[in-house]
Image (tube, rainbow, N blue to C red):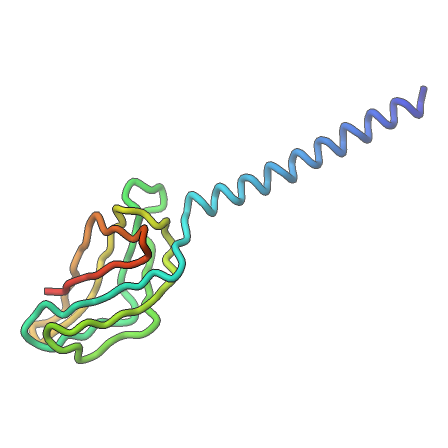
Length: 135
């Protein structure tokens, strides 16, 4: 009798522990899925002005619209100085958002007229590519 009760109790404990462990794993996976990670996205920056521009390494932002987390910092692998008019420059990054068809970006850049911020809405990064014309 005592032996049967202890098996039932230990079986219950094992089931309870397994259930908590599986729930923790599912929660972690869902949290990562909710926050997103879009790897190897090629961001192409096009100079749409008539003069050279510079794009800093940091200060940019990115987000999935409607997400709980809001804007995330976006740091490029390097900055680009003296990007000539009508020229392109690309950087491949891991973004900390989901690969969606309506991502939002704030890109900082500067020219002889000062510092600028360009906002891009509804950017399709599901194909892991995006082009930003800075003007």
